[in-house]
Amino acid sequence: MESLIAAVREQDEASRYLAWPGDFDLDRGDHVEEVHLASGAALEGFAGDGAEGTYFFCGEGGEERPILYADSEGGAALVAIGLPELLRLLLVAPWWRDCQAFTKEESRELAAEYLEDMPDLVARRDRAAAALGLDLPDLAEVLTRLREVAVRARENFVLIFTPEGHPYELLIRN
Image (cartoon, rainbow, N blue to C red; front, side, top):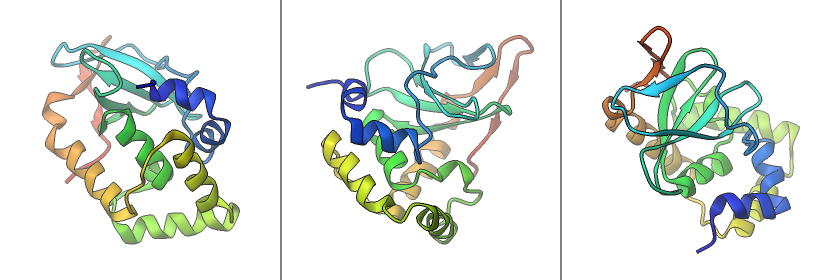
């Protein structure tokens, strides 16, 4: 099977959507601060966003590894188990970082704002998903899974600011 990272790079429709509104850039894998996982597991930055946040693969392996997101303000959360799950999140709810409560209602309000600015958002999303060969769950499923992954596994994926030894704040709470 082809790498999804390679597919994103090769599929213009997908890479454009993921760049915006997904705010996901495979050329921004360096984090602004020196960090490590409290568990000592490997941490590999592979993508970032325009606000200097970073997506990290955790542990050993390939694109199936857990993915932690760290913002530039000292917040972090496990957001997906594997790259397919992360891409589904970015395709279905690219506004996830703006959510506070991760409710369906809150996300619908954010979606309305995005749709106002980009009336073709859903069509672009569907073309991007098709280009990557991904089936898309509905919004409620994506948000439920995000909260489940972040809460269930948080003790195993504590991000530490290495120079001071302080943990990052949790981005997603119960």
